[in-house]
Image (cartoon, rainbow, N blue to C red):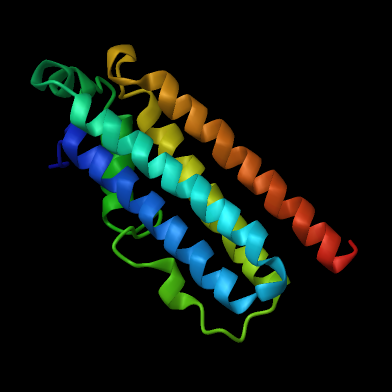
Length: 163
């Protein structure tokens, strides 16, 4: 039987994704000092997303939490079950812990692009579960910003590899 997710659980996952992203970019900034400003800027953006999710989390009423779980086709619940089980990506693992320090800047940028794509997929999966009154437009805004991160990282990758 699938797990039923409530707003608190979903926002807790989203907040952890953003914490992990910020920690990842900060560790990468320590390794790639030539791109420290670029990477710290991305960490700051993830911090901003974390704050947004924390505010949304605090503002969800019990009634909205009930509405939040509305998923008649059980698609969102199935997706979140896969995510929570680590099949999409595991929020309990800090991606910065996977960085050894020997990675090149292109390696780091490729890893970052993958992590940003994972977060986009997660946010797209939860977007339809969030009622307008609980901040659906904020999730849409964060998805667009994460897409901009992929573009920024892709452009930086082209710049450093010349391809």
